Length: 285
Image 1 (tube, rainbow, N blue to C red):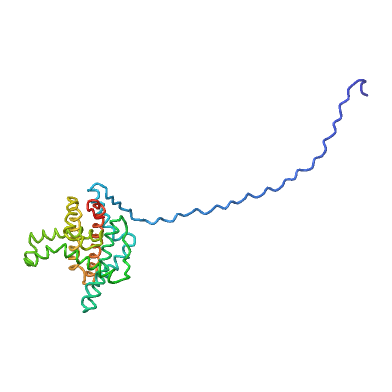
Image 2 (tube, rainbow, N blue to C red; image 1 turned 180 degrees about the vertical axis):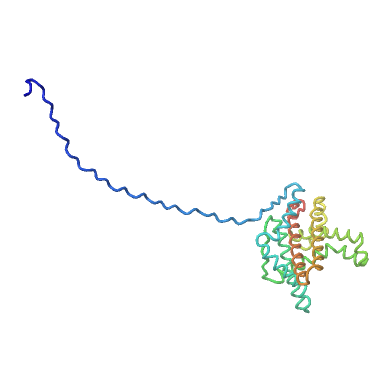
């Protein structure tokens, strides 16, 4: 028996049974599809452009036009011009064999190349950096024969002192000191005469009363591109002479034609860049 007034322990009922926690399966991790790494296409290697600044110091300008002119014929689509040009140069040596028609073909091909020569001078004067496309012949007389006559006329005017002296003195006199000096002066006259022809489109502008004062205004710097042109011509002739001895006739003829056309392009390029620098002194346009 329990003692009276003895406290009794409180009854605590058991906690209700809780439902079992059902675990839900975890969702599988999402797969992220990574985009394939972008493969950079190799950049086409381009030839660094040679900047020719007509306002640069004269020594810097001289070096830049020489570098530019040497790479100019092969720049961009240059080989698509050089190869056909060399073939046309070879054709000039063979078409004259055919009577009458060969002479006509000669003047047409020569005029086509002459028009391209003058076009290079004009585009170079305007600052173009690449070879122009072949000229479009729509009228044979105007687009081929007339440029041929202009180049022939400029050549006669430029080298007439040398030709007259050679005729009067014979071959031995032409190869002497006076003959060589006259040839050098004629070679100096020719680029300025071509510039006059391109800038005015008039053959009379290539006469001495227009050309000689212009040369005088460009001296003494004008002598440098002239000397460069003469040296390039000498080097070209030297290479052509060597090819005659070390290569078979066919390959030698092909190389000479290619070098001749290559040299004409360089000559026209330097002439145009010379006009670009001395335009204000020339005072023709």
